Length: 112
Length: 112
Image (tube, rainbow over all chains, first blue to last red; front, side):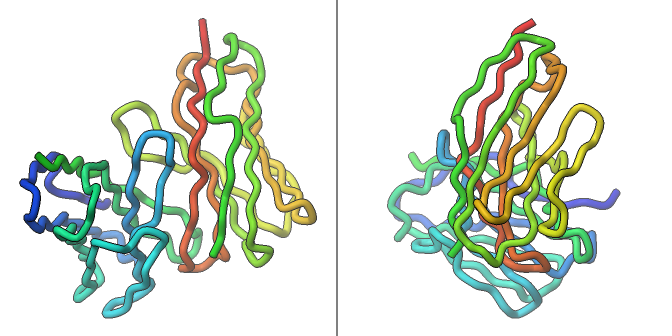
């Protein structure tokens, strides 16, 4: 079953802890994205990667880090430096020819 | 970078009426303009897109128009149905694997 998978779906974190969100795709897409969704603010771009071993900051990269060691995987680490990490995080991969974004089901992070 | 603004933030219509959502963008190099629908608790999914070489595109009850000179594009839904109720996002990109920026979203409610 082809697609994009995010895990975990729900995550709770204590203040001061780092947490890593997983994003895996088997669509053979080069580009992958991480967005943060907050009520009334739409989808804000955290990081994106156009190809393996390369990634760029989006609009709200502070307090986050990513890696792209494999084409299929684009994990996002929410560090303790992120001041307001409680949010819904969406990962997406992009169709090479169409430009369409295919989203995962999201990960909801709550900081206790 | 690209900045996408979307209006209105909420829209309520009676079943059978039309709904229009408008977006503006700032980067004149943007050439790909997709629209995504996000139903409650689900991932965003592409419903229609338009590229800068055309001014209008239709798919059954939905249509998108693009005015490159004014840098705005709109989503039109005719004969609305309760299942059209969702949050709609517009987006803009330079195409290819370049970063995609989203508007803040419009919550559409179709009353039966």
